[in-house]
Amino acid sequence: MSDFNAAAFRQHFPFFAAQPDWIYLDNAATTHKPFAVLETLDHFYRQQNSNVHRGAHKLSQMATILYEEARSCIQQYVNAAEPAEIIFTSGTTAALNQLAFGLMHTVLKPGDRILISALEHHANIVSWQLHCQRFGVILDVIPLDSQLQLDQSAFEQLLTLHPKVVSLTQVSNALGTVLPLASMLQAAKAAGAITVVDGAQGIVWDKPDLQQLAADFYCFSGHKLYGPTGIGVLYGKRALLERLTPLLGGGEMIEQVSFSHSSFNHLPARLEAGTPHIAGALGLAAAIRFISQFDVSQIKSYKRLLLKTFHDGLQHIPGIVVLSPWQDNAGIVTLNLQGEHSADVATLLNEQRIAVRAGRHCAMPLFDLMATAGAVRFAFAPYNQISEVEQCLKALTQAAEILAS
Amino acid sequence: MTMEQLLSDTATALAAIRQQDLPQLQQPLDWQSKYRLLMQLGKKLPAIPEKMRQNEWLVRGCESRAWLLHYHDNTVGKHYFVLDSEARIVKGLLAIMLSFVNGLSQQELKQLDLQRAFDALNLKPYLSQSRSNGLNAMLNHIRHCLNE
Ligand SMILES: Cc1ncc(COP(=O)(O)O)c(C=O)c1O
Image (cartoon, rainbow over all chains, first blue to last red; front, side, top):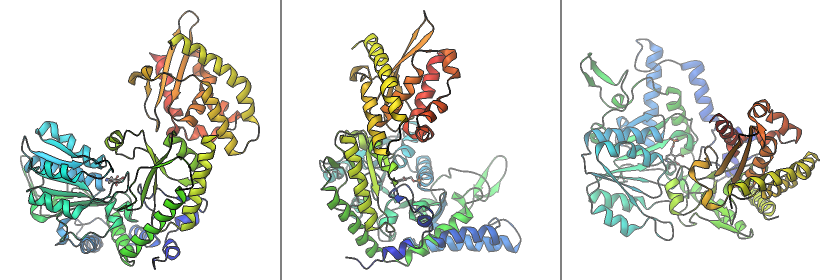
């Protein structure tokens, strides 16, 4: 048992009082927002609103201070070496696209290889793929073993091809699998690669220590960590961030512009062209302050309790085929009802006000590998209650009965 | 299974659906029974055999895959369809849609008010979710066939 007080945690989220009929288990898509985040957004627009880094006036200076404080707050949470290593982006997708674009133009040469895994979200596949052909760069994929875990001996083999970049998700959004990142990143570094972590799902599972983890880059989205949509982070080691070609050009990111040439500003401004999502950055910092009040290991064991309740209940429903691993799982269970399409199962759950996602979860290549047309995904968060898991099991039983009749 | 066979089986199934199932759907039913009925009704439509489920017939924009075959009878100026879906509830909803659409002329199809037709069967919510369940995509696809 854990000492985590889920009922008290849930009280921070006004959504549940507004939608009392719903059981929300689509947390891998996005999470709800606590009062602390909502109030920060509201307060900023009502009382502090100004653009950053621009005005000579005091209000702009105040907004700039808040924005930079938000950066420092995030830096401390992930334990980056300095605030300038935290680049604000619109989310994980934008961060990975900046990264792929930036490395292609500088670090990567024709014939170089990039290594990803079979568990990646499209964001960590397509952002590289977009450039591979043009730059003559080769994308390799770490395959799965029969347990749907990454095949570690194949990984070792692929490292002997000396990939320039190894880019891995921390947690599979489709299956919930937690990757053995620490060892994999070390092996990748030992093979001379630049290491990238897609932390979109991982950031809610574990608090990263970026000076401990052998990651050169780490990306995440605010909205999966109880923060606003439209804000995310590209973390990078300073020396490497400085090598990235900016994806976006415009205001604030340059030092000197003439019509024939521009010289770039310093970090982080260099990679933050245009007016940033100022309120979003403040909101993300508020989310991080909020989550910092709770003990990560207690939240983890509470999520394991939710998983165990779900696991035990599933044993009583005939025809359930679970794709997710139960060990090293971050709180996501993907399953099918034997012989049924996931869209039908999700329709019947929706009818019973259970919010889940069906389909291939932006991981089409993974579902091709598993030879599965799709699956229903239940993604748990610490504000979910044991009673909700039980309710969900009942709804799933009901769905199975309707489909079987 | 030939195209002719599929067309004629579809027409027969749709006649039965119009006669037996649509009146049942208008009765007050609990949601469970409604879905059971939808699935039974979908089952009446013939399955498009695996080898005919080609990409060119695939309807894009659905969570689940669906296929639509189109036949234009030039002599009478009417449009006929065969459809299938890998999801059973979706197939039921598509079957209902097809029961309104099959065998109409281009002019009739343009005038068809599907919203009203679904309303009359107490199925309005399903049409409004049509983005996710594929009704919308199927309807666009049918319009596309007409314009070819
Ligand atoms: C593992 C993973 N990577 C990347 C993303 C993309 O995140 P966003 O849509 O916030 O950019 C997601 C979101 O679903 C994800 O789960």
